[in-house]
Length: 203
Image 1 (cartoon, rainbow, N blue to C red):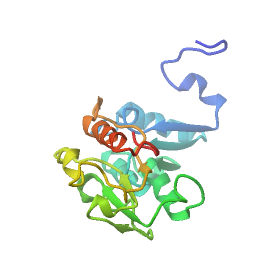
Image 2 (cartoon, rainbow, N blue to C red):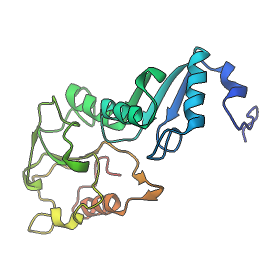
Image 3 (cartoon, rainbow, N blue to C red):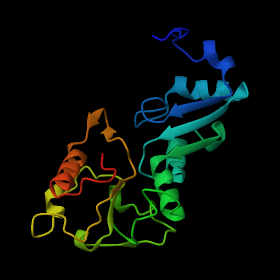
């Protein structure tokens, strides 16, 4: 423990020190079911004390989708001040193309999402390639539980092909779900590295 740090079992003892509070979504507010009663009460008390509360998430979905999910789980948008997700950051980067790694990407992506969700590219000047060989880059925003093995996405020659861009953009920087490392995401990364696609942000 660093000098000056203290151990706490709740935010109450230190709440007066801060004006802004960042709360992780998964594991802090909920674990896929209803929002924890203690977490909901804590958020309410922070807001009553005049704090600004922002929810953070490494979800590959955009902020609006996560906001709707939190509402279904028991925490309405009025309970906090905003939500920021990896998916929203990715969408904004692809829209603005202002800096690396987004500014040098092409206009065609091979899209991998959960449940066929295309919200990560809605409103963007992008086309979706059905063949990874025809894509400028791969956008991995989520994986279905029943997704096919990543080896099936390979090109016939056994690699991802020369026309696939060197950069793989990952809108979910972590791949922890249900308290386990998703082996499929790890395998996709390994396949891309073996195919010579070592540059980029592949988790």
